[in-house]
Length: 316
Image 1: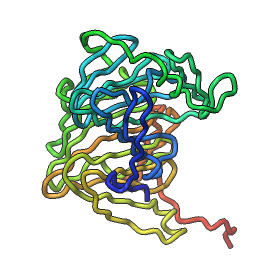
Image 2: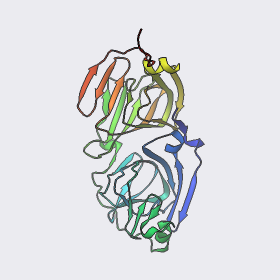
Image 3: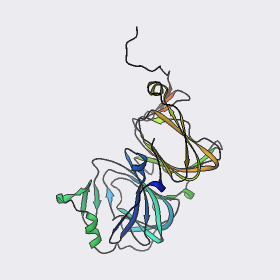
């Protein structure tokens, strides 16, 4: 079904030198396919990872609690709850430094089988779980043996770090509001929004994607997730529509090509969520209520006739 709750995901603490953070692999628990999603709690004054960059993967961070500094190419910038940090592939070397009360955030990252990570301080290039020279030990060990990360006073924040208070909210017919954070001018591989549904209302219309993957993280409130199998799929398998209760802390994964549409309805106290979706130019989006298909890369929408289920047998 693609549903998990962060209270049920086992935490793993990783401590090496100046790095000290507890990780929860939300994406794996929810069943994501091409996207990693982790919840991190960084100890006060510590780093979650060494300074690094990715050759192919793009990372999007959203700060939940605490404070700290975003270290980026040798400069630091203050971060606070509601901040979104976008790290495009092969652009900046980066990490985070937790403030005196610690730092809690969610990070989304696109997965690429050919990705490599660059750790500038230890001069390690990591391919998957191995790094150059054929070594299989952990380059973080080398990082932990070095001097602590040096940095100066915080400077003005660059365009890839912004807060939901710094973007114009988009209102959708009085039903819900959206804060667009990772827009096309800020990110290459994925879109990312903060969204609040008013009590009792529906969010986006029922839909499913052929190639794009969507992940939803519930931040506040409660509601229901609705799943609608496409007519031909339902006829062939007996699948039925579902209504699934959700609440703050739930992670919903909607991988591509499920042929099952989804939508959300807020409960009596409203529903606030983070919405992450990959960008795929060859994606097609199906809207079952109107029988429409959107060819996303072409910017074309058409209405189709829904055929009966074909069992593969020839007609008489």
